[in-house]
Every structure is written in structure tokens, then in C-alpha cells.
Image (cartoon, rainbow, N blue to C red; front, side, top):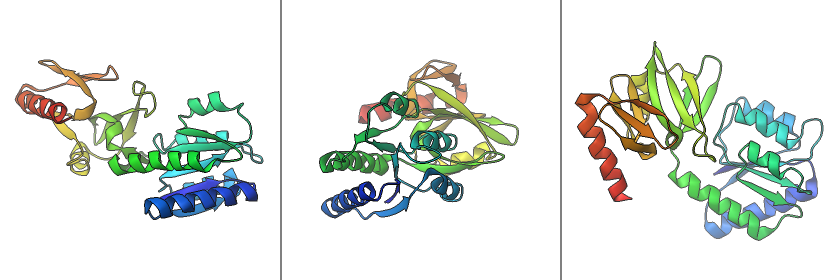
Length: 241
């Protein structure tokens, strides 16, 4: 599991490295840790390599603080877990705005770092990620974040549920076709419900004769031909839970 620490104070970086190493040894989960001394260096590397399980971000840094940096990260990755570290508690409300997973006050507490990593590891074991392309960017999405995929021209529109709220959604235009997305998402809870739509079974709230509705309130058409199959899959999923 790959982690990133963005921290400009050596003493706090070393303490966090010690705690993360202890967690790795105790839980027997191998980790590799990349350290960055400022936000700008991290964002420069992020453009080419965004494969991290979690970011530990110091808020109070140089010309760009950690909060500004995470806002940039959220432009392309709505799901990556972020843990803020800081010496003061003034930024907690801003942390909610960027959907931070946790907020650790310095000096860091070993038990709280362990709790954060347990949560990250639990999430990582259940998440299924895929990479999709817009005209200018590459995005990493969790299959569980997707409500539906709608064919549009040669590409698709994906409706994504923002992870922390569970209700707010956003739409992302991607260049992959609906057939390509169906293959990428095979076995990840996403099924075809209409000639032009795929849907995530776990996010469905209820199904009517001509439409299905998601927990977020969104709704899409369901074809008569596929109604029985989707309905049975929906019932089977929640019976299993």
C-alpha cells in the first residue's frame, strides 16, 4: 500500500514515519511511503502519478498550504482519503469542505494514526477503482461511487456520488464508450438497465416499472426487456446483505 506524507517539518515527518512503520509491522501490511516537503512538489508529481491509498497533509506549509493543495487534488480525485495534520484546530470546518477523512492534531498520537490507517486499509480492501479519461484529464473512480453511466455520442456521462455526503452528485464526461465501461466494470456491481445506461446496484433506492431511483435522488430509465433481470439482481444483493 502506497502512502504520501506532505510535511515541511522534519520532526513531525519522522514521527509519522515511525508510527506508519509500526502500523505496517503490527498489521503485516506492506507500505511504501513517499515524502514531500511542500505542496508544490507533491502536485508536480501528482500530475503523472496519483496511485496513493491515503495522503497525510500538513495544513500549515509555505506558499501553498495543505488545504489549497487538497482542493487541487479534489479537481481530479474525489475519493482519495486525506488526513490533515496540524498544530491548531482552526481549519476543521474547511476540512469538511474538501471531504477529509480525518484531522490529527500535533503532536501526533500513535493510537489515532493507527485508527486512521485501519480505516484506510478497510476501505482499500472493499474499493474497486478504475481509470477513465476526459478530453484533458485522467480520473480515478471507485466503482461504488458510480450511480449510473449514460451513453452520449462516442463517449459517456458518469454520475458520481461524492463519498462523504452520500447524496451530492456530479457528472463527468468521459471518452470511454458504454461498451468499454461495461467491460471495465464487469463483476463490480454495475449492470446494464437500458440500451443507453449502466447502473450501480448497491446505490439503487427502489425500482419502478419504467425508472429506477438512486439513494441520491437521481433517476434513470429502465427498459422493459431488462426490468426483470435488474430487479432480481437488486433483490438478491440486498438479501445477501
